[in-house]
Image 1 (cartoon, one colour):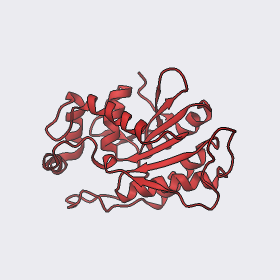
Image 2: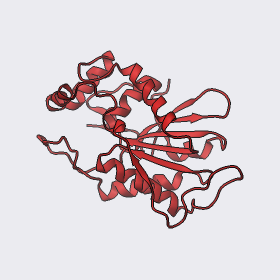
Image 3: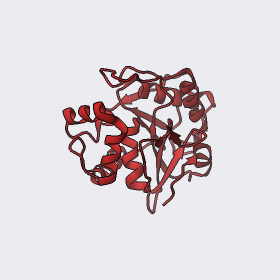
Image 4: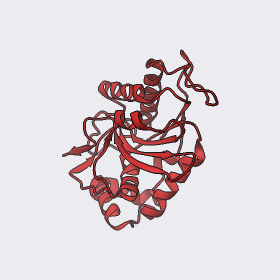
Length: 235
């Protein structure tokens, strides 16, 4: 199994035209979450640089076929998905399609993002226990769960990661299916599907995650991807 991330530009350059792509991404760069924040950063939005990062990623998504966008209801995730869609429009991917495929986002049309509650809390089994984990140490609590696969606050990691993939496949069948969520729900998927190892001081970057490539025939291919210079953050 790989332990590195493929640049998004390289990934999109090589995808099969007949495959469906499901991209599960962390939101773009956000503003700082202060210690003791009572809503654990739910109100914290993207930085200006984060918005530019998401638009740049949108420009990389190929023109062939349609694209749909889903996100956690948290504002920075919705904004990330909107910026990705705007980037695809700016790149001129509005009206170009091959016969038999749906067109992309029409030029001048707004980007429709569907908020999904599941993308906000898919792995949470016990909300009070989860909030206690956040108060005691987010990275340490998540890594404890990743190491053992079990935690009072969360559903069993490996079973739930498989359910996350199936949820994405059931929600959309477009050419490009973009799902934007939080790092807490991407690290278990990277752990399960890609064999990644995370530590509190070695974490995943913004606009980073994994892509499921679903061909017309054959097996689903899973690729860790990043729209940043590196998929890793070191604290």
